[in-house]
Image 1 (cartoon, rainbow, N blue to C red):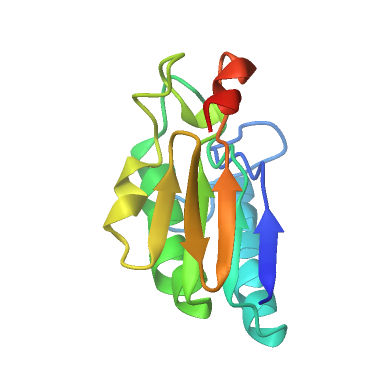
Image 2 (cartoon, rainbow, N blue to C red):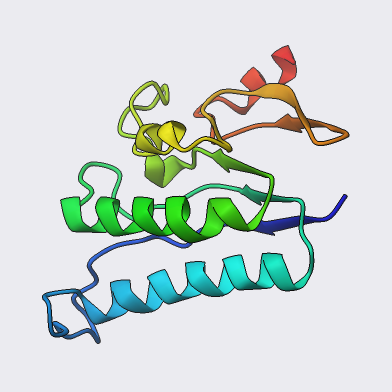
Amino acid sequence: MRILFFSDIHMHNWTQFSRTLEGGLNSRLNDQLGVLLQLSEEAVKRSADAIIFCGDMFHSRVRVDVDVLFHTWEMIRGNVAPSVSEVALLVGNHDQNTKDGAVHSLAPFESIGNVRVVSEPCSFKLGTLQVTACPFLEDPKEFMRL
């Protein structure tokens, strides 16, 4: 089984070194969306079976701009998820609004058919593999309960 791993893309409407493109999109956000597109193309090129994202999809813990969430969700739904059989998105510390991780910005991605959002330590099947995944935990000792 071939798995493509990535993490820490920190999607955001960055102000430094950016400009507003025609249509209103932030140029650095557009570049980040391009990286997600490249990721999906690489998954197809390398015949990946799955993608595991290891956390920090978004930059801000307390607020994700609607356009950032929308364009990221659209890219995952329209390009990344269709490029493989399964996608697992682990919740990172920047994706969590609360320290216990109960409120996080990856919840909308659960609506995409082959996407699993991992918000607490767990084991699951990924194709033929048994995977144990641990999203960000405020108390790392929580991982030991697996």
